[in-house]
Image 1 (tube, rainbow, N blue to C red):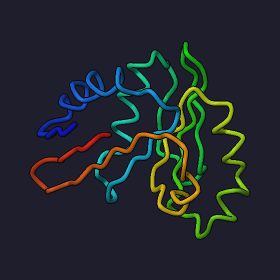
Image 2 (image 1 turned 135 degrees about the horizontal axis):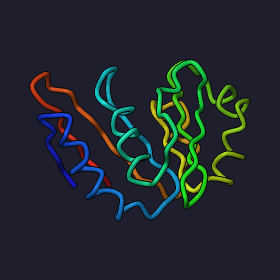
Image 3 (image 1 turned 90 degrees about the vertical axis):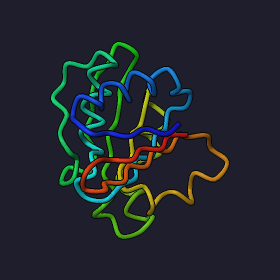
Length: 135
């Protein structure tokens, strides 16, 4: 699926289209700094019925949100330097116990997902707009 975002309100349209397509409990979010990964997550959590405040987990590494369907864990792996640091935060336990895990900056962990089904969303900020691809 391909989308173009020209205003903040377009995020709602994208979330409305993507949410029914979420079949796996892992969603990788890729995009440069300021692309809109956390903004997307804010709209998604609202759509999933969470009343929790959604912030970037840049410093906490993982944030937990409650939804009627279960826990959602929102990761930011940007500051983690290697796979050992990812395992040190207990990522496997989160993955095993989540309705959904949203992982920003997943590159350090991506090879470990071989054979596991997940979704991937890429956000490219072109300056004027954002180009979104989801699979």
